[in-house]
Image (cartoon, rainbow, N blue to C red; front, side):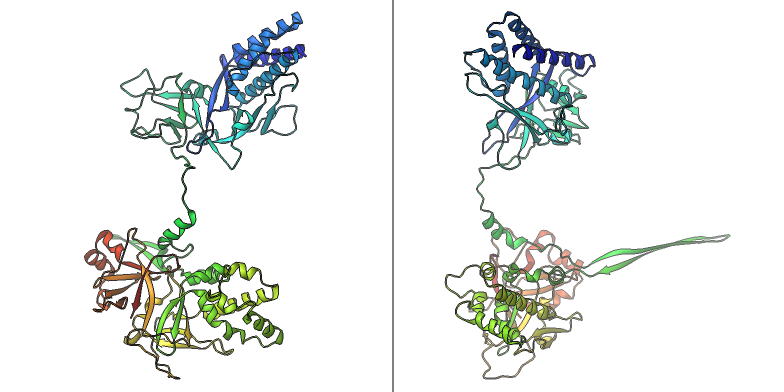
Length: 612
């Protein structure tokens, strides 16, 4: 066995001389090993370790001596343990008891040297593909011979990702370490600790970068189509950083780069695993500033360019025209029905329903699940067959209580999606079908495209397509606030619930329709405000609409202070051009403090108001 190991060592020495003769290395090669013990607060590091060829020659000599004397290999043991100590970090290996211990340690050292030199030949980048294997290998386990009486020792080699140096390597790198050194959970990227001369040796060619006042010591390194630069002055994370764009701002004040002094090269952004943010709470607290993906306001774009010229004996004229086309924006309601979002149960948690009391003409914003609860009986009447009616009766019964479930008035109620998924398949299909019918019917409620009417549906006893068209006039001048936009949607319906507010009282029994919606109870907030915010009486505010118009209102407070603040439409500001309003009325960032948006989710902190 000793003779076989000696032959392997001689073959490795021959390979090294071949690479040296070709000019690809000098008197050493490098390997990457896991350097830091993983912690919750630090980015793990790899160390670019230099292995002198003299160690290989020493191992060859001791193995040959052991082979010739046929004796105990004290020299081979000492040499092998010295090589392994660099990669494992262990300094004490004790003494060997039998010759098998020497064979085991020497075999492991040779496995490491051969694999490390092969990895160095391709700059440690990517999988290794020895000629005797059919496929490339990305994970190695070096075990020695696993014989002898000393404790087992093994080395692993794996492909790992680098932080900023990944832009230079363009792929993962092969790294050595003990089995417990590698990150076992989730993807992880490593910084690199290395000396400048080893960096140039491994990933060169490259060149040092000097400043005009010091031509002896470099401040940065140009390598791999990029630059390794020092950190910014005052940066607490003292790391060098690789980037493909030069940053010369800090070179003059940067420390000297010594060829044999280690530096850490890594990402300037690190993961702090000690942070204990509650993601759900942060999401809810931030929900007031959210926008909706896939929606946008109206815009104009160039659709055609025209040019021409005319010349004669005594003149030359050139004309050009640019034709702009106005493109309509995409509202939340547009996206909802184009993408089928309305069939998602999470869609029911938005305050996009408008319940209008037939008795008083008072309206209020409600959750869409409450809208569904109010309209389920009317739409269920549209299913005439007895099987469906029996299923509906079962849903209404005490076992399922479908209407109460949507209103969340059932004690110890499970979340609505969980309840729905646990229903028998026939009942679940019926509920989803009813929800689909409700939203497809109410799709056309709200402000009409011509802006002259506001449609309010009144489904009743199987007649689901009937509605009131409320004229937009002096009595209903606030209704355009409910126009579809990139911030809110409106699904309006008549309810038999008597909603009273202020002077608007019950007109029953059996009153006639007045053709008016007197006011809207809702809640508003300022999405641009990050601090505590409240409406200020006598101040003007605006809602933004999809056609880039602003709906202006003025806040009013009753002397009694019992009722919430009232927002009244302000026609005087609306008559001014928008650019004049921006410059004269609300200059700079103060203007954004007047931007209002209706509450869309329960978790949004908002102020209750009435709009008229």
